[in-house]
Length: 388
Image (tube, rainbow, N blue to C red; front, top):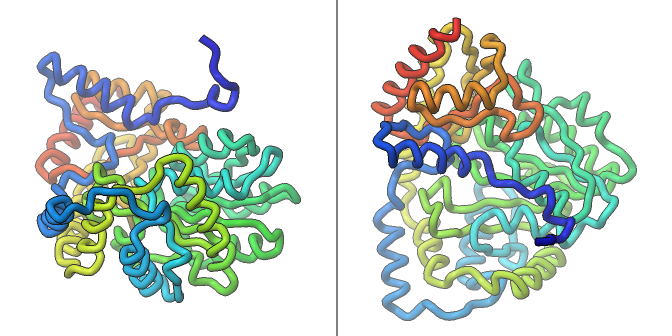
């Protein structure tokens, strides 16, 4: 069977591949602790679920405008703007079935074959996949481990060229949990203005920051008009399966994205958007409670990893991931990941699932209970001790 060349580079996302392998072991009776999948282990907050059920019961199950329900777009504009210190109009907001379309559609609307797009490495694998899917050149830029996985500014400057058309940022980061500094955001903003290029800022973990404040490049002078901000409800509100994302962008770009949605997904489920309204306007007590639980898990897993000889793990300021350095074991990250699953019954991801710069690292999600994290750390320590 012959397929189009444009999809030849696509491959499964690492987390789903490891999850499938882990589940296969579970079906054989193995006890597996899952630290591979980036999904909150909490149920969607009850008042949000009830709002979705109520919307279905009220008949909010039909088509809605491709860019989203107008009431929802207004709520999103007000909330996202207030949290980032900028004025956002509802016409700048586009709702999508999940945040991933908002990583692909801006590239389709703004990037042409031959253009160059800078993205973080290690970084979320969809970035490179989407860049190459539209026929552009993917230009990876490393994160500096010495600067707590902030963007390597020297490498960033070297990657810029006359063909740079877009810069992708992710803060807080998957896989490192790092938060881009104000110095870095200012540096990137200056380059974007100088080269007259776009910034695509993936801020899906914006509400999950434990040290300091969340920073968005849209708050810097002149950046709201050249940035596409991608955010969503999966992580903050434990709504992964609801598929609810939103983007903020200049109005002409929003109009083009609405056309792409028209001819692809059509629209986002109406009742899901009404659940989203409830999530945003209701008290945020559940968000605060879960963020505090993640803070405690973060401390637990970082302390436990650093107690294992050969493992070095910094304290990440955001998201719910750690990215420990395991170079001391002298084995490829994928081999080490497979070993921990087979030997210890702990599912983790190799850093190379997030790009070549992830070699020598593992990514662990602490979106699991403290009890399971403790057990996983004990198993890992025992298994890694066997490697000498």
